[in-house]
Amino acid sequence: LQTLQAGDLTKTIRTVTGLDREKLQLQTTRQGDVKRHQFVWTAGSEEGIQVGRTCILDDGTYHYVITALAEETAVEGLQETWTEMFASFCLAPEKEPVSTGS
Image 1: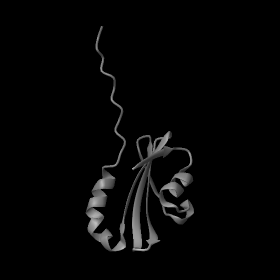
Image 2: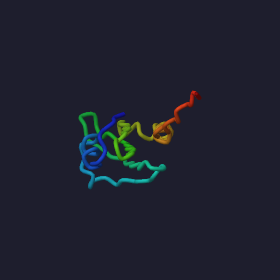
Image 3: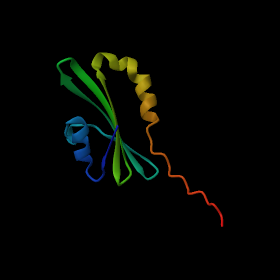
Image 4: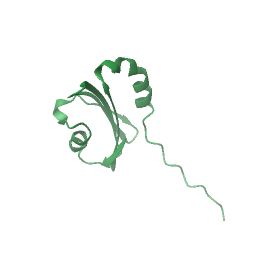
């Protein structure tokens, strides 16, 4: 999990993945006033190919980022876990202040 300054989605993507935005296929949706950007990516390492899944929530002030990374051979067994984890990633609404009455 990371929180970065909003305003430059390309910079955020490069920071969290090391990749250029143009090399990824972003799926962008809205949750109220929040933009939700999701994508899957791969990277090579000494251990083999790593598969990453990232979601960026953009409220206009910050980019809230969650990334999961696993070996390619393990990803199939993680699909259900990753689906649940990413589905639960959201911004909690601010609570209204409680009136104490005067």
